[in-house]
Image (cartoon, rainbow, N blue to C red; front, side, top):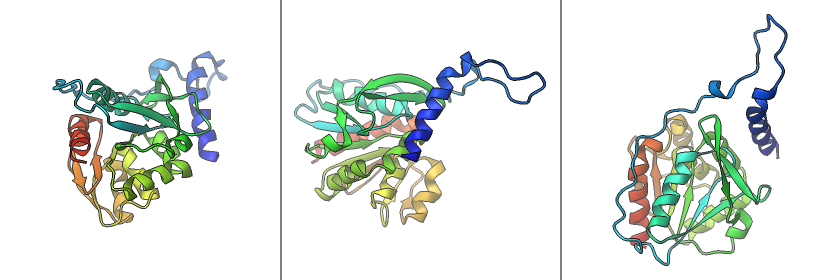
Length: 233
């Protein structure tokens, strides 16, 4: 609950900063305008051509995310999968069932309507489960027991599980790192190593039924990994 409160407080603060009254003159602190909030660098990655709108027909995919998910890391794979016929569910924590807010680094950007919650996802068989990045998002998901149950169940069934950027940190809490070749954001490299993973500085790593990528810059590689996972299972 503490993590949830921090995330929600931060988003409320960012959205209301422009309306705050200025502090006393001479103070080193001042309200932040929306123009001052960092948005990071958008990835220069284009969607691959659609080879067939029915390529993933009959496949059902879950994308797990919470507030603060990096916009490109949910929009890009969602678009890729839907354009090729997959049914894609956006699953969110039980405490925010209506949906979540994406971000571009620190800037809130989009509202995403949820398909269901992590708890509801436990009742559904998914051909693929995708873990998204964004530092705030990953911290929430990795501390959510229902999400971790879903992730462990997916792996134990031998079904594909994919993670990108900070999303790979969720695998630590799920107990799916020791002895694995994995990649993820360089920021969590040491965390993955400490959890027993063999970190690979590569855009895409596939081992058994785990697919991992480093960052938004690798989204083109990541979706190719998703394609391989869906078509070879």
